Image (tube, rainbow, N blue to C red; front, side, top):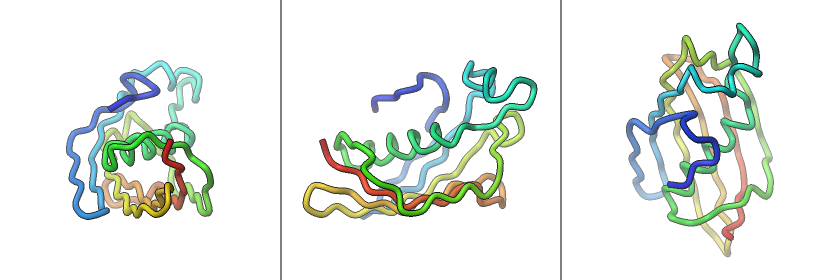
Length: 123
């Protein structure tokens, strides 16, 4: 799997079953990205979450993808990498005519952190 931001997260488990992915990732709380976002109060950047979802979808589909649109992005809770190192992601995807549509949720413990609907072009 090609990762844009090296060492930001590690995939601990990955299940891909008929268009449904269930993945668990561990965030690297010491990654340099958290030095700027934000000093002494680290928060997982939303754009990094979207990139992670793209990369997990690429792994599931074995296709290179380009984000073409998002119809629904809801950040429901802050992801603090020091307190919420373990994230659970569910990605439901379908492919049709060169595009992949997804519905995603990201959670930690019992907290819903992110909901995302997106469309990717296969490149």
